[in-house]
Length: 250
Length: 358
Image 1: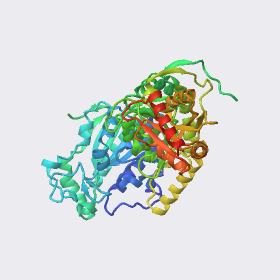
Image 2: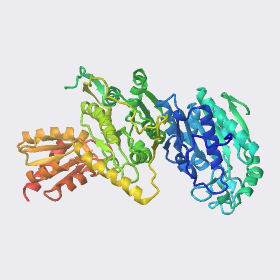
Image 3: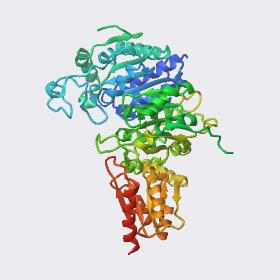
Image 4: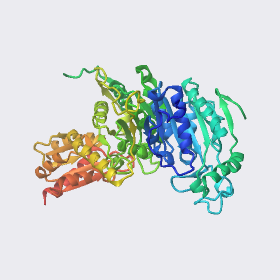
């Protein structure tokens, strides 16, 4: 018999704490598969952030550092600058990266740090219980926007990839989604390109992954995937925004 | 074996600290510009790359200390430097560094506060430096030089202690010591030996994975972690350093550290010239604090006058050390004002008269 599916060696044999229907597990697996396929597991250092993925180091079978809230790109910069031949990546949520960590992500991208950022956008603060995130949709009800996100007082969702695409240091920027199998296949291709960009020394790379948070969204896993597709995709267009340091779109 | 030293060179304190760090073998520096310490960054920007080290100007002190965290966790010998408001911004990162037990050196060239304050020399951040490394029960080991030569020497020692204890070591100095020039000699020996420690996250290779982390969700586990840290701080008491100047036959003592200790030294000589047998006790480590010599001195002298460029911070440690064995007085100047020898002498004479008449 031929084994056709196995756990990537970059993932550990640890049950994940993520809620049923959450797509963190899928995103973890994509990253682990890419690291395995590139053959860089032994020289990869990951940086976990604060949020649901705070325990990412329990699930990746890799050397890891756990960073303060929002600071993962600075921590990754410190690692990469003293170990330039290692593969360094951060795994951050939207509260971490797009709110408290905006200075760190912008400047890491602007310096063209040879790091890869996996950015999970589920439009909400998951770990702390479903508060409004910078990425929450207009009108979206959360525990801190109980009447819906009012854009007059809380602003509009931040488009991280489009914002970073204005910076010359960013070499690969893409937004992907995990709402169905075809999207997941495309997402893996983007993750692979991002890591390859780092290996080629081209500059900063980031993949924004649109993800679900069924529990704080108050939806079943299937309904959450449907909501991601129907509500989040129109607000956050998918695609590659920068490849090889060249802007694909204005 | 004695350490080889260079000829003496006339240098600014900030530059001497930077040169000492290079000679200690610093592998990476991350910092953000702030007066009165920017010459440290400037010197390292110019000279660290030629020694194979990494210089990076961060977007903020917040980012700088987290770069220090990452680089230290990756096994590099690493440092940052800043001044008072910058230390406030680094408190979060320092707490993570202490919790994750990462070695690093932080140079704090203190200026006047609170708030934006000014860029004049101050000692108003003693509490911040010695009482806690950010939130939680963590501690920095804190060294307080009184001369530029000592600033250079303690910078080298700081790297050694940081790596020995896997703990941040702060060199606590001030705007005058950073800005003035004095002759200074450097170690001419090879840098301190350094290799990435086994715990560093350098990529696991075929071996077990490593983790740099300060989260312990279970209270029992976090308490055990804290107990271990506290035991380490107890062990760090072996590093206590102080200087006693003309204390042998002293009847009254001044307690002072850093820049003020220099001024107090002159004051002691002038007091003795006038017939008042004064002495000086100068902590070199302000954490851990040299409590024993203060306790011993309290039994010998009529009283200890603590002089600081603050509203009275180290004086609390002096009182804790003395434990009521004798009177402890205080004199301080605030906001970047430097006390003069005649001014301290007048205070000392008043204090001596008061405590000797008790």
